[in-house]
Length: 449
Image (tube, rainbow, N blue to C red):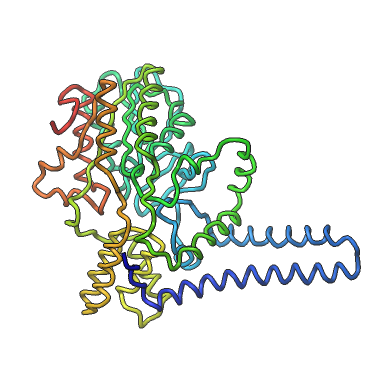
């Protein structure tokens, strides 16, 4: 297969310029340290001591610089290429933070007002709840990734809150609490470890596991090899707390991949089918050991290549800043395409293609379409993971709520989504209704059948 077309030269000039700023900063620090060594060596024979002190001072100052500038890199699996533009020019408030055992986690106490997203002090989305269960309360714990989290929606419109309102609408006892255990981009490895480390402390009566998309995601790493354990755990933990470590780690990845042929990247799942099945089975085993009812929830996604992805306020802001940084003469298509370098989302390329069409730039439009064709799919072998979930549910005799059957009954299935993965308010209402019927016995154990 031929190498994918290159991105516009102006975009790479910009990225290289930002990368060069960083290299110059590091080079300046090293020169200062070197000169300090030489002067110290002429006056004092304790060169190793002075060398160590100089390096310590420099990297301490660089660490402070990264923290003051707001650098807080989260190692998402799809953020593996072209990050310099985002790190130094496109600033945004992140509600995630690096975590050695979970790779990343929600940042406790974060509030994002424009989307009405509230992360409580224990690091989960939603209101503050004590670990101890109040008398007369039944708890439903829903575990998963960004769809469970409610990506792109305010707290009032996500299905976990809608479900809690529906379960308590009639009053009486028990009173239900629905706990949102979703974290964007979490795989079954991360969700399982998060469950054992934190979520199980809420003493749930019902556990709903929703993990599939992130596991079959094609990534540059697999979660099992990244999660910290073993004899080097404490050394890795110290490194993970350092912004300098994350910066240098990402810089290496970026410089290695600026001219990468994305069509030749290996289709490496974040979880193998065997590991994914094992994680689902462990969820079941732990749930049974604490006498909790467990079920699976399988989400749907829009019909392939048949969705118009609207730009979110966040994406609009990225494009606005991108246009400013590239220059006033840059086109909207180029600005959007540069945003794609730091946010590997196929929807952004689709929007760039439409922008080039509006600008009558047929050659750029064709080039972007070729890049889209050469990219590894986000969800490779998705059906195999869906079958693994279904077989695990059947083997253990537990319920599986298949949302795709419900979505397909709607007149406009794609209208239920706000992008290529995440459902909007109407989609969340349908999920809440399906869960309500399954939990109250007012519907099939496998929704959509």
